[in-house]
Image (cartoon, rainbow, N blue to C red; front, top):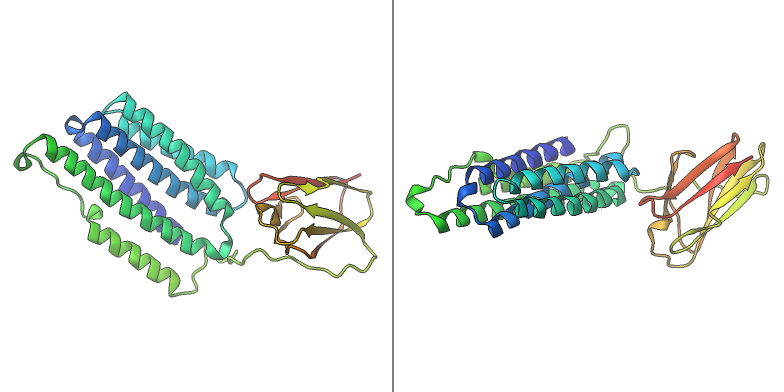
Length: 286
């Protein structure tokens, strides 16, 4: 519900600002158009990118593509009626916002998702209210106020938008709301095992910028236990590890041994990576 309402509010507000800019395009300066296109594209792409990143969780590519494309479209359509320079400014802002939003959404710990979505939504609403005020100032600065019709839908009424955000925040934080009934947002949990020597232990040292070794070779028929060992006080996304191939998503504890029991694996290559997909490794069963 939170995700759906957020997307609807973001898209509806973005569309109105785009239309409002187009409607008054002849009364806007090139510099004003650049600022409007940049802000509209940046805020919409950051917000959409973050939400899509939350939905896709560990897949950074899809949220990035969606966020960037959405932002570029918004930036170009907002800026082009005013000037090509404004459109170019909007395109650049859309690319930057989409990339940043996607990374933020994917990196979020599940227990922090609700708080961050509401926070992003609040920032989006505040900035868009100010942006509409900027457009109004640009218009009234060039023509007499009495001749300008600045009618806006109730959706863009600042009080209404603030009330909506406060209501969403209250609904989220006053209940045990979860993003998905089938996937309650728990933080990364390591399925710890006690290594008793019966399984083949594969030790992987977690460094600041890598996993060493980044490939483990295991013979077929062996029961395998991965042992992720991180240096003390390690601050890096490398401690958040996921593997779709091996079906785990964990946060390891620095300075300790973290055992993950895999059992016997079929021949093949099984990949794992940090949640930002910056550092990766694999287990090869031959």
